[in-house]
Length: 494
Image (tube, rainbow, N blue to C red):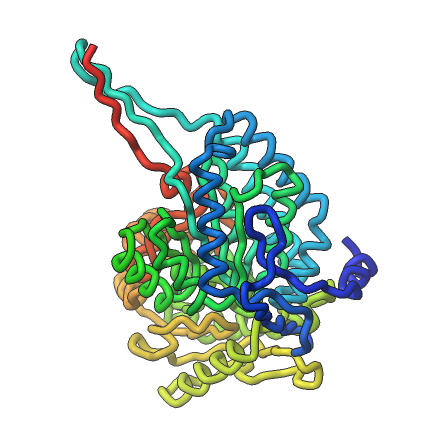
């Protein structure tokens, strides 16, 4: 990858996108379209179909027909594996084009996007392709005149709703295991970042995925997302996004067919630094990257920095120094460390959080303002707020932007109490040289992922899931497959 290659793809016009239903490109049933605004410059990049309830119903009907006739679920595991491996190869072969398209759509810096989007998506699809013929049923320990068998069957039609921060990566977390186990899928990308994911779906068809097995409908959540949630013909919904939308999806499930709903709803992840951390300079660098990369638009971002009081001032200064050295700007420049905020709406929300934080007694140690207004895009300085209390808005509410709240603590017990002081529980970290303390933090902090002397980087071999209002179920690893299968008992008298 070099800058010239990136600029070549940047210069290419982006054709209008439509739905993908039953293997065909389909416009909205009423002809409606949505403008796609690039956060790089605030200008219209292209349009997508603005889906209707009828569009979503058509996509679900296509997925149901594909599942019932067995065109995918009925294929031998080796045949499904072959298609998925080819799909992964195509994603990899088109990685830079996909990454640049995604950056133009959502603003992630290209250095992160190339790895986290097509790179991660190809690896995820390949992982589940290799796993699918190694998922066995079970034989129960019964009496000699009984054979008890436990079959693992595909659930049917899966509805997947994908966020805008990492659409390909998170999309693959859902699509990989769902398709590997023989399900059909209806995908609903985010209104503000759908292009690279839609192109990835097209590559699935090129790889040989049968028509109707994977359908994708663009549009507003309040229309097509609601239609998916209320459908009597969707068996499982998987969603990554806000808590408010997650609650509505659970309500829709209750009002319709009691479909299973799996949610990853973000959090307020604590990054806890003790004075005995093995390398405080490294911890400061990692803390800055753990909140400010992708402009803080990461579900597991370490948005709460809890620092032992004896090192608080020096450590905050080190984090601020590291953050100040991170270049904010054009996300398609290889020299940029922090790209654009996804939308004007999100940028304004970030700035409101900063204003609220200062009104509640917080002190701005770095940043706090919008920058690069002359570009027309949506950019914000890395922002550090100190003096954030346990009950402050910046402690209790997810910002989903480049805003770090800092709180001192005196003892290990108080650090754990602060870490657990929110309704969330997605990720966290502790920095310490004390092995016993490290294990106490792992046990004591209520979260789905706990890092020790690092932040981020967990690969696809381990699950990602939350506790509390960070959701339920897991993405990644073999455990993710559990969401996409149903257990069936066969009880046979011999």
